[in-house]
Image (tube, rainbow, N blue to C red):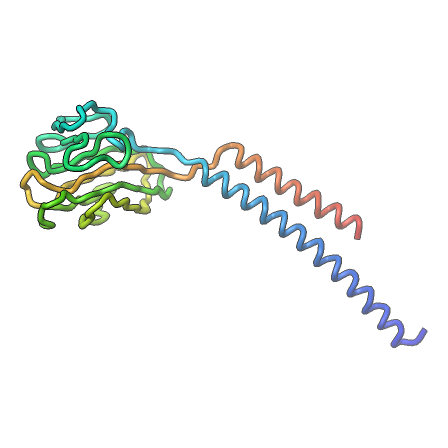
Length: 225
């Protein structure tokens, strides 16, 4: 057998082995991608709500009425108290109740949330400016651990705002404050939520099982090669 024939045979064997390697690698990568997608979906689905009484439904107000409370479940209120409405000057995003932070005068509400250092949290809340009231009288400022996250207003209908926040060890303080003219008229607030993705124990089990499966497939392919 001459040198050219030997080289041709080696080249054919190389092509066969290379194609086999690509097929094995592709199958393994596909399996890893499927496992990663499943784990990510599971982790995304497992969320923990940190806010207590984010819709202000834990306080009874008659339909078509409003009332100012010195305190409500879950929230600390400053000033004269928190005005809660039920189908007055608008309707709630969900349920019956929503609040205005300028009841008798500008005020604020705050809540301490259990957080972890460096963990990202998603804050969402709905605002709506009071109809027929000047923009200078509207506005809600959001604070996270004493740092302003911005002033929100100019919403003619219920508008949901979402912010990404980073927690500190132990607890973080969320606060909403009225910033418009101190005239008892202002922006409404409802449906406050703070969540964090928390992988469940089943997620870790799925990941370990998937990695073990990938290892088994790789070993079996290697023996067959």
